[in-house]
Image (cartoon, rainbow, N blue to C red; front, side, top):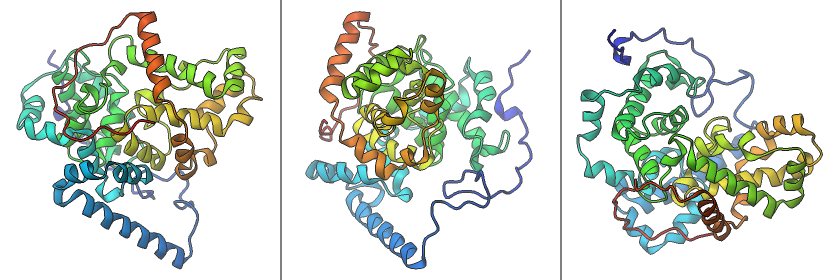
Length: 366
């Protein structure tokens, strides 16, 4: 029997209009607003601050990103500080491409994406079609069955599964690709996915999705040790209750917090993740545990598991959580734990890193 592709399906009915939040997700409660209701003067001040921020960013990156590398060479600390404060939403897609190295990959590989989508076939096509409706199902772009959003997501995931047949397609990849598609075109999203998994700027992420999830296992080992280092009482409590990071933190690494965290927080984490690398995932995880430490340390096993998957709303405020995360210094210890893990388990790193010459200064380590 001939395999069906997504193009063989007719789009489903367009979902009925429902109230959306500012990012395009269906509101759970139509009566709720995005945050607290602000007075007119407070709203105007917020808008003024955002417009001022956008002007600063436009001046920094130049038209279409033409000044980006020059500015980054001259003022890397300014760039780092501004990224940590949050990239303006209207510029987020472009800046993500600049800081990830994906724009360079796109320019060096004209026509490759089209070739992968149109002329190649993938063994993962049916798996991708099956999983597509599970990716951001409450976002208006992905809601219509076999509609434009789902087709774009299918194309990106199918193209990557052909581009790297060793990795192919794994379910968690859909959340990475889906998030990127909300801020850029299919082709741009594909090359950013390549930049992340193959390591255009930072260490390659493909080990998160290879058979046996080798990089996930390494990250969980590192995270468990960091919890014991930074939060010894909580680490001891986890040990007594037989709680380990695989029970609550795997998705943090596999989807970089895009799976179940509030979208406004996930975006702020992604801003920093694309510039500074995976250490922000460890820092945010530790910051969450630190913020909720006094409550978590009292809970027995069943309630702990629930709490670790359902953090309170005040813990999810990026203006509170992220400064706490930035204050946690882990770079040296993270490298030590990586070497310890590789020594214990045998070095299994694959030579899949891209030969993309880095022409900008590396990010200062914390």
